[in-house]
Length: 412
Image (tube, rainbow, N blue to C red):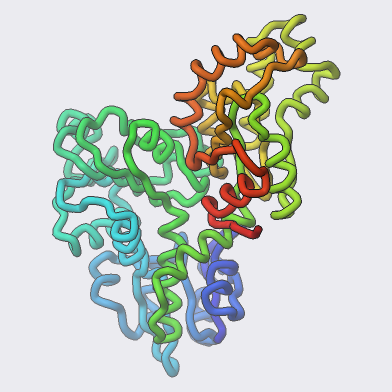
């Protein structure tokens, strides 16, 4: 099959890797300028294409048929060529519906959708399928409520959905709405796929609210598109397998925990097993200082060291094929954890306090009493920020195996 993606500009796209995972097929990127569309569609030299910005509406004029839901949404992201006849579909709405279902999000209450553009219309179609009541919040006046009205009515909403580009890389510090201001939220969803965990999803999780992001939606819409391309039924479990495959290539594994909890040893093993680049945060900072951490504390104080630590966390937020061994105090700064979790999975390597030990080269845990004080102070923070908690009281190989299994990457 000859498949591909059209849009302009395309830049980096996950689409080839996703579709090749599902179909083991040829999948090309075709960055087409608008004046090239007439020729491209006249030739029809493809079996199926996906469509992205800015052509989801433009391509409709080239179709012979359009699916009813895609027509209602007013946007097409998938086109199938059946014996020269082009039929357009929208798989964004069905992917979003599948994401809600697989994450078991409650759709019985009232939702509020941020934004009124094309992504919003696809999400609205999904909510209509579930019979979910919703409001559309917009700054342009094209929604049903303003943002001020949304916050005034916040107690009515159990589901918050971001369909704006706010929070997308490189403006990934931006927050489209504050989930902490909603008293009845049961779930948060974000259509932004980059970073893997947006600031909105991070804030939701810190408020005890389950979340799902646009990366999952991207994979699920591709799976639905491939069903249309091939005419085959494809197991929904393939989406999880694909996400784990891409996580192995794109997501960092971030180890947090007390000093002497075994982070460095576990990180080295994970780096060897997975081929990830190893980053020892304290070693990186020591190299930049040209001195030890203890000497830095003595000469310039803890605040200066923490500023360097925060700077490094920001550098590491883009993830990649990396395993990060954090200093024990990284979790004291909320922004550190948001940066590290953007494209990383956070692991709390938990070792029993009886097995932790003091060390003269660690300025905050140089004696047993200091170790226990730190553990009491930080335990709640390790728990709050971690995606995975793994005990490291026994064999280190079992510990590493547990980390990789929980991350969907078990290889031992």
